[in-house]
Image 1 (spheres, rainbow, N blue to C red):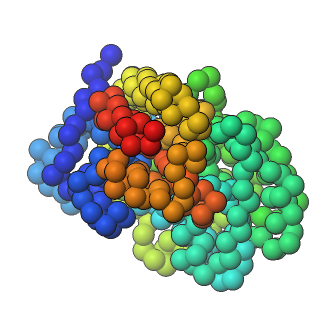
Image 2: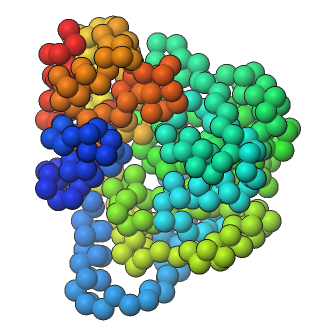
Image 3: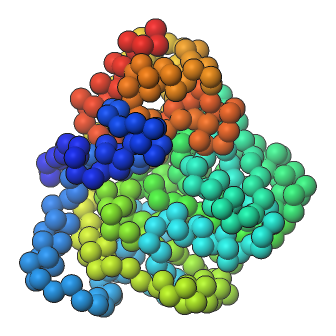
Length: 386
């Protein structure tokens, strides 16, 4: 067992703790936003980076075959899906990847559909590129989210949708989609010639008996689908700026290659590759221990709120380390910021960021931190919202 070390990241140029002004207008809030961890990365990653740093020369880096093999082996072992090396491409982040793919697969003005509430860079990727954003709301029943297939299909037809950006596992709803759910979605997309981008950055953060199904493993849809993955959420390596774009279809690969060659962004930095390879090769035990900590944190939030704020709706956590909570019995859209930020002194992701005012009584809370930090956040909610 590898010891999981909590790191106090204040005054380290950490965006979550030291960069709150842009989103909240002030500093000094108790940080439970930004989806990264407060845990030190696996020791194998530190060792590999230290070896490279000690070398003292940081010139041009040749990406070794062992980097690709490490990811291929990881994907096959953890998710029972075989990736071919020739399918793998680079992006400096999953967010950059789906921004680029919006440009590659659609034209200005064309419609892109997402399931809301959803990770807000999805929304930004559509708006930033002058495409038409179409939102199909998930159905919620006591916090458990399911897909409204009829609404999804009708909006594809009515708006001549060209592209679907899927979040799998879903952020912030915590769902790990079942194979039959994915197959039903993909069948609709194929019927109307809709491309699919599947963001699977949280694929390794799975709980309570759920199983992640790689979208590309659902037979019959690889010719119009691209998968995005990364070690950044799994192993807390966002600073490495190294993500994987998986493109089985040759025509889609050619489109990607033409775009990235024209922009001359075809590979990343050595530190990102070295960290990723080391994590995929040696980080599994660390991950299992981190998952236990996150699950314990989730159980604490769920149980404490059930006892002390019983009308708060805590979404079941199947995947991600992000807890989606409806506080509508205790806050309104209008006083959310005053209560959560002004009185509780917590930095969380506000629900309306994920798709609009209809989610304005929700918060998203990051559980990838110490139990003490979680307790402090929950205590602040209880003290100020009762």
